[in-house]
Length: 99
Ligand code: HEC
Ligand code: HEC
Ligand code: HEC
Image (cartoon, rainbow, N blue to C red; front, side, top):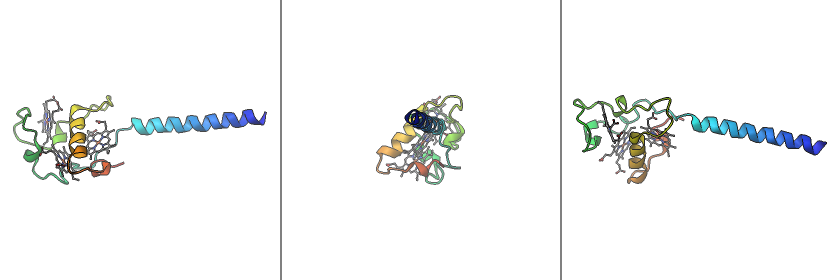
């Protein structure tokens, strides 16, 4: 029954890999502190032209915080990823996130 035993071991190893992989993917990569200010000093310059009137322009993330219970990308994060991935500047994930 040696084969059967190793088969079980292999299954356990694969299962562990699968579980940890899922946990890592489920965790939202946290943003660095002042993730945007590192490159954007003047937020009025990166404010989308079509944006609801918000008065005093503060850090974007002061309003655009994701719902911690909902791991779906927000319109905001989709937009921000698109801008920095497709533009002249392809930012590495670590430019904004601390992994
Ligand atoms: C490492 C530098 C860097 C960081 C960090 C960064 N950006 Fe940018 N961002 C850029 C550059 C460079 C551009 C110009 C985009 C291009 O043309 O490739 C840009 C463009 C933008 C634009 C489009 C501006 C326009 O002219 O339409 C927005 C909006 C924006 N960034 C928001 C953000 C937000 C929000 C954050 C923080 C979550 C952030 N950026 C973090 C470098 C950065
Ligand atoms: C005072 C709050 C506030 C601040 C600060 C703010 N926003 Fe918004 N933003 C909103 C609201 C409200 C909407 C309307 C849609 C919504 O409810 O998310 C919006 C919508 C957007 C959208 C359209 C996608 C979406 O989420 O619906 C983008 C892109 C956006 N904002 C980018 C920015 C950027 C970049 C900054 C920083 C320069 C910023 N915002 C700062 C409140 C804010
Ligand atoms: C310009 C800054 C910036 C860069 C570069 C960036 N992200 Fe993000 N990311 C954000 C912001 C802003 C959010 C939404 C706020 C939050 O989740 O705390 C976010 C959220 C996320 C989320 C949570 C789901 C979502 O979309 O809201 C994942 C996953 C993610 N980023 C992965 C990545 C990966 C992988 C890369 C590299 C390919 C990357 N990000 C590069 C700014 C950035």
